[in-house]
Every structure is written in C-alpha cells, then in structure tokens.
Length: 108
Image (tube, rainbow, N blue to C red):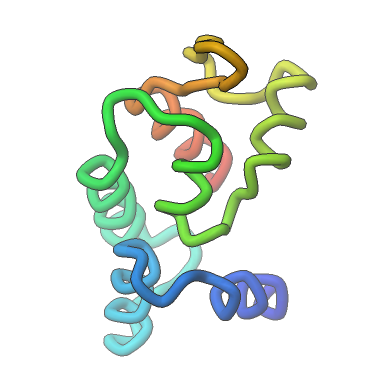
C-alpha cells in the first residue's frame, strides 16, 4: 500500500495544490490513513480548486494525476463513477459537489 502511494505521489505534478498540501502534512508527520482532519483539509483544497463543472482531464490535472481520465471513464462505464455527470459535445463533465462526495466514498 505504501509503495503504491509513494509511486503515485512521486508522479504528481509538483505545482498542484493537492501535492503541496500532502507535502505539508508529511512534513508535520501527521499523515495517516483515516485521519479525519487531513481528509477534510484535502477535500477543502479540492473544493477550492475544482470549477463548478469540469471534465475528466481537469479532474486528473487538479488531483496531480492520482486519478487518470481513463480511470474515471472506466468507473462511469461500470456505473460506479460520480453520480452527476453530463455530456457536453464529446466530453463528459462532472459537477463539483457530486465528484467530491464520490471521492470521499472511495477513500474511506
């Protein structure tokens, strides 16, 4: 589990707010699985960064590549993706609150 986290973390773009927040938590040695305070901080940072509606690529970019557009596409195809989504042209877009709620459910 730690090895997978480390590989994902190391592949994140260095300028993403989520990676910056993770670095702060790790420097304080408080990042542990199930720490509600850190979870809330991470989701609050995501809520600030995500626009009201966004596509899979934007979600992936803002999250530092932790979830790829393909992963989101696969989840949608299985019926396990975020609940509120629309098709605009050729793109699938998500609604921020629904996406964050879906993400919270996945990390618990």
